[in-house]
Length: 255
Ligand code: 13P
Image 1: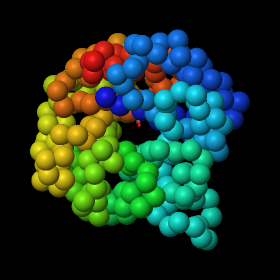
Image 2 (image 1 turned 90 degrees about the vertical axis):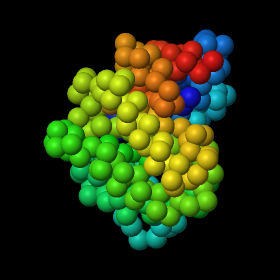
Image 3 (image 1 turned 180 degrees about the horizontal axis):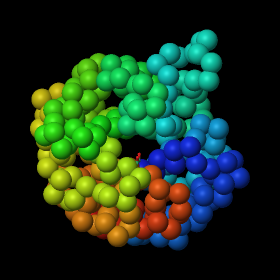
């Protein structure tokens, strides 16, 4: 079980530091209840180092929210995999639907980022998911298949534990309108079957996260599905209590 928080473009440096300190206090206080789950948070780049420092005496990992595919160079405004590593990152989110929508990220870009993450020992959290119009048209599985195949195009031979896939239906993100547990399970089972094709028997060991309006009140129903191995949490990760509560629910499912 992996419960990861995507802080998106939220938190100034003092706010990120306070949130990370709250989270550190929460995980210390609830250490037993959280023992069976992994946790990670992905703050804005500028707050990575402070967040990693505040969480240094916990098992909560830190990740980036995106990354460039070059190691270094003339790419104004971009952040590289070596920079993420040096700032203390274990993970990097790639292909979030907001990156695809607002910054034009393609399936080929996502595939290149997965390869770059692996080249620098970062675990990519690959986001896939259909829009409402695509679901209504009956195209959800076809879209997700194209995204998964694109993301893993250059990832042959990667260890399953070095890969995380997050199913985030675009219509469920930030809307309060989460997928039903049945919808999530059906798509996760489909993704698992694709992974069997792409990474072989190790597919069972790939963490498949659900993301999209996961909150403490709906987390148990989602996280108890057999192919839901965790959550990628947006809004509810911005408070230690709600994020911690979801992680405790995940830990109870994993125990
Ligand atoms: P919300 O939990 O706010 O819907 O965001 C989900 C998400 O996009 C995580 O990456």
